[in-house]
Structure formats: C-alpha cells, structure tokens
Amino acid sequence: MEKTLRALTGNEAAAEAMRQINPDVVAAYPITPQTEIVQLYSGFVADGIVDTETVAVESEHSSMSATIGASAAGARAMTATSSQGLALMWEMLYIASGLRLPIVMPMVNRTLSAPLNIHCDHSDSMGARDSGWIQIYAEDSQEVYDSLIQAPRIAEHPEILLPTMVCLDGFILSHAMMGVELYPDEEVRDFVGIYEPEYALLNKAQPITMGAIDMFDYYFEHKRAHAEAMRTCKPRIQAVFDEFAERFGTQYGLIEPYRLDDAEHVVVVLGSTAGTVRVVVDELRERGEAVGMLKLRVFRPFPAEELIDTLAHVRGIAVLDRAEGMAGLGGPVYGEIRSALYDLDPRPVVTGYVYGLGGRDIRVEDIEAVFDELKGDVKAGRKDQRCRYIGVRE
Image (cartoon, rainbow, N blue to C red; front, side, top):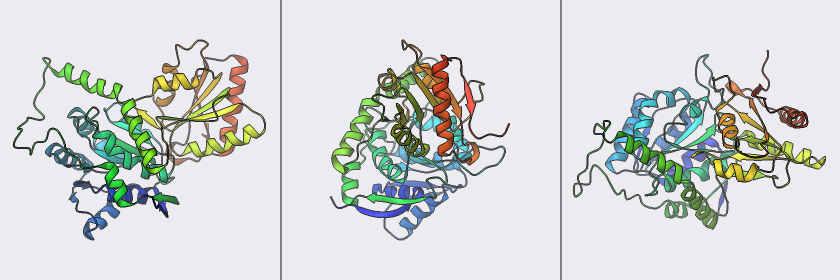
C-alpha cells in the first residue's frame, strides 16, 4: 500500500479522514477550535469531492439533533464540536446513545466556561463521559486520523451500536502541524465499508417506531441493555484495532503501556501529554530508574480489567487529569483508576494530579517532579494522597 506523507494539523487530519469516509450526512456548526473541521469539509462538499449532504444549523443542539435524525433514517451521519458546543448538545447526546445510533464525532477538547477560555482541557468530554458514548483520546494527529477511520467500524458494529467521539486536544493537536501518513482513499473506504443499518426509519419494508415513551415497564430494561452493550464491547473494539493493524500497519489498543514490564513507578495519562511523559520516561530510564507510562486511549468503555492486569506489579501510580472533578477527590480519571485498583493486594500508591486547565503548559520538568513525588510517596508508604495540582499559583 502506498501511503502519502502530508503535513497536517489535527483538524486537517480529521477532515481528511471524514473525506475518505464520505458519510451520507454531516451537520455543521462552527466553534473554536473545531471550526476548521466543518469548514474544510464544507469545502469538500462544495467542490464535489464528496457527495455528502451537509446540514448548516444554527446551534450545536440542532447539529446533534440533525445528526440523530439522519442516523435514525438510516444514513451514516457525522458532526463535530468542542467545549460549550458539546455542552449544548448534552440533551441530545443521551438520545443518540439511548437510541443506539452509531454516530461518529470528532470532539476537539476545550475548557468549559466560566471564566471564558478557548484553550485545551478535558472538562468538556469528561462531562459527557457518562452519556453512553464511546470515547477515544488521540495523542497526535496521526492518531486522530487513524481513530476516525476506525470509529465507524466500532460504532456500527451490530453488537455495539453506540455513538463514538474521537477526542483531540484543542490547539495542541487541532492547530499544530505534523507529518501524517494518509492511506489511499479506496483502502480506507474498503476498510470502513458500506453502512447497512438493520433498522432505519426510511426502510418502508420494515416499519419501526423510534423515540416512543418508555415508562417504568421497560425503561430499566432498555438502559440495562445499553449498559451491557458498553460493558461487553471492548473485545469488539480491539478486534477493529487488530484488523486496522493488519490493513494499515499500526497497532492500537484500549490502553498502551510504555516501558512498563519492570516499572515500579508509572504515570497514567491520556491525550497529547502522553508524548511529553514518554520523553521523561526515556530520560529517567537512561538514569537507571524503573519508570513507565500507561496511555489510556479508550476511556469509555473504561478498561478496568486491562488496567488491573497491566498495573498489578507497580508500586506507585500518578494519574494526570486535564479536568477537575469538583468533588474534592481529584479528577475523573484518577477516581476511576483508584477504584479499579482498589482490590489489588498489595494495593499500589495512587496519587492524582490535575494539570493544564485552560491550556496551561505542562513541561518535562513538571513530569519529572511528579515521578520524584511519587517515589517519595511510595517510600513513605503514603496511600492517603488524593489530589495535587501542577503549575498552579496558590
């Protein structure tokens, strides 16, 4: 397969993946820093490069509503958003997942107001973590492109049927350029395949009802089935990653361990910060320190069993959260990892760090300091550490 290397931003990589997928319907509403995705895609439509029906709407609530309507009708439907846009979609996110509609959405991470801020943190997508959507976090623009190609196969799997968002860090990835290997259009379209929904409102041969009221007689059973689909879909997601590796040569996983086999102290992270942590791990390894990293690539469904298997031998874990949980117990990733590892015996020291809110930089020195503190916690046997902050003035 002949791959084409191009310098692309994360937004451009997302738009290229969407162009190759060529969905039936894209609802478009701009919001910084996602605007470029729908702007570029609208250009593809205007130039006749794709035959997608675009729907220009007046808000993100309408954008998700139009996407839900198109998907329910039987179309392969996509949209994109960020920050307040995702928050404005909130009501519809639950409807999309509750109706088991395989919508795919690039989600450019940006902080939520107030105060108003257009830069990156994960408060937007973390706020939607319990809405029943699969969440994939990308480390770089190549992973943005690859993840969006994988996303329709995951979402449309007949035993999954869950909407999927691919999260990329605002400005850090969305507007930063790097070399991205693009695959031939025909290879991507062959991998993604033709969407043939089993149920669709426009299928007159098989009339169905969607959106009917569901009281205490069956609502509980439907939500239980929804949760079961999320709980059991991990092997099917991994199967898509494996097939992608066979076709395009890059292997992805639900989690991605880095130099973990003999590591005693580990940083867990998701998104673009994984690149910085990887540099620090390599530097500390050269000094003889047994450190490692675990990148959490799929956050929903939460890969608890995989984390337990991978981290059972570790003495200390520092979890980096780019969102504040507002519970007085640290960030959301920290809380879930600490819970997942609670039954381990011996239980490792697990410390949470909140960093990078509103786009604040996290530096190599910051990660080194995290490893130093973690080693001190383990040596002192401190297991009551809840949350620290990196780079904040207090």
